[in-house]
Image 1 (spheres, rainbow, N blue to C red):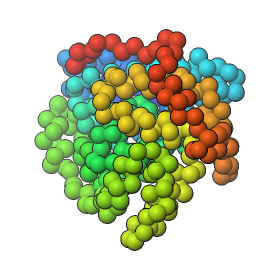
Image 2 (image 1 turned 30 degrees about the vertical axis):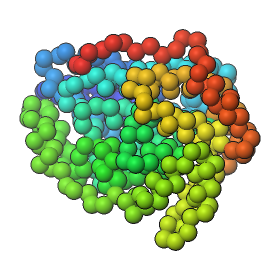
Image 3 (image 1 turned 120 degrees about the horizontal axis):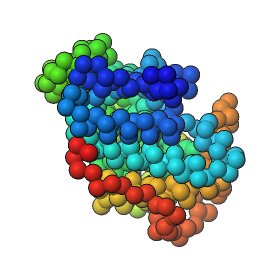
Image 4 (image 1 turned 135 degrees about the horizontal axis):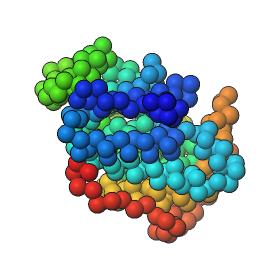
Length: 358
């Protein structure tokens, strides 16, 4: 336990349950490479274990499940020029997403707080995902000069209509109702019942019946009334066209469109172009293909000005706005964006041909 606690994540076996606890509250449960590797190690160990019925994942932080990758560590590595370490961080993250995808025992993250980026990657690809009333989902990577990764290329384009493109390009946070409508979570259950779920997994209780019984319909998602506009605008053929449609929007959705356009214009123009291309390509990829592509893109982008600047600005806090290069969409080289997708990198991501159950 001592080593696990030092990692900021603990692993226990309690009766028939594997219990994973994110425990870096001072860092908002930000994820390090060692945490991803420990997760993969334990899921591989539990997959064939006859005494483990399922796995439950929880957070010790009262309002944050996981803030995603540890930007402070990534910033330090970037300042040191340790690109190899950054690449191995992303290799560990994407490899774990693949391990989780192939883990067929019940896997039940209990999320009652903010979950961003990498935190979504360690919860979304399993068999279940439970959202409490405090659940907040976001893929904000275009705001740090990066890309919606850890499977975002796969799952975002498969959301209803063009919502995935909207979420990828804005980093908008959504709550449990919208997440359930989009099938990003399997159940919405009051957090007061989370202990019942943990006890059931420990006791080998059939989990689907229990979760279905505890589920409460969350009501209408917050994007429902804007969905026609989102579909009309975000189906445009380019990021520039999306912004033009947002600027031209009138009527009931005008204020929402202005707010959306203003938010997009804060993001890295290069990242917006990368994310848009990801969303176009993603529907034709399986998860393995998406993760391999994301590793290639990540390996290129970590060398970029916008990645260094975006993370540095976020670490600095105090509202410092990043200075993107180029600063405008019109100055982004579309051919250079295409080359990010097609140019191989050294030691590309390889994923084992895992059979379900590992």
